Image (cartoon, rainbow, N blue to C red):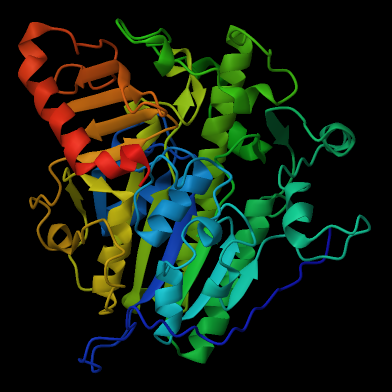
Length: 489
């Protein structure tokens, strides 16, 4: 096992003349800590969200003690862009936060991230695992940046970010590791008889626990971020978690078909998965492969759930729970062959809807809210809970503290999501999408799904006369409220 090294960054805080980053005057309020459990590719397929097949007891317990948001959505369903958007509190546009390769530090260099705001206001900030997509994105936000193996010396002369890229798939079976080293790829799943600490997420959870002990001794407020690689491909998990789901209980989705009336632009080729060995370059996977992939995804969910349980148990053991905001959120959802699709970056609700659970000291737990929330709302919410002034003119979301107080409150009439050329609005009743030619700015296809009748989005009703008024209204909102996002200005 490689030795794990801690990489610390101590930077002199930057002074911003355009916006004063300071605490509100009431300095008698004790600053709450924040534990961010940041999930990768996790859709709300959890027991607490009503999926009884899923074994997620620790996340379910967190939901029972906190507030669960049933209608939370990312603003772009791909990891790099979604993470930058949430951490900066800014929407994606035609030219900003586009894909997995997003660098917030390059695309919005003058913006103040939430982690940076906290650091400027006396918080210790620690990034463990995958928070930004890129290890070296906005490193000055953090007092410490750490990912398993990344900062070890290597014989290839690679910088930490590049070395990490050569390691993160983390196969434990010798034959898979060999294939990865020799080809840069490997199978899309792995079932290995190894302890929970063998894989990267297990190592990261141990680091988070060590950090909590250290932070308790220090006595300063903190932002401790735990970024899990699972549930990302490859679906690698210790065998014990695979065995929680009998093979005969794994089913393919009932709607493994192209939605009625959906345009060709809505059906992606799921290129990410095709990069793995054993996955055909064209066409569908076999039924057996599909079930193994779904099984592997379930296993990763239960694997991460156990690690989260250990972290939360230690938070309580260290008596940090009474003044720590715990947030569990995912960067986006995921397709498991619904609509013939795999992975993310699609124009369907299943890749934009995310789990969002918050446990906030002083707020009643055991509640759920159907209020529409989008991930750009996270920054202003946490800033308000920490009693901090947000950077002026930057944030584009709304604080949902009113919903924490009263789960019947509504702060958004709609939420905005985009992919490369699909621009979407989700309301409590509908999902509306326009596919837009990015050169001309003109729509070339549209979709409307009536979530009151068709929550799984199987029938596109955009051209039905009875929905004409709805389409006109949502089209108007999209091209006025989000005109700049479409144009890229």
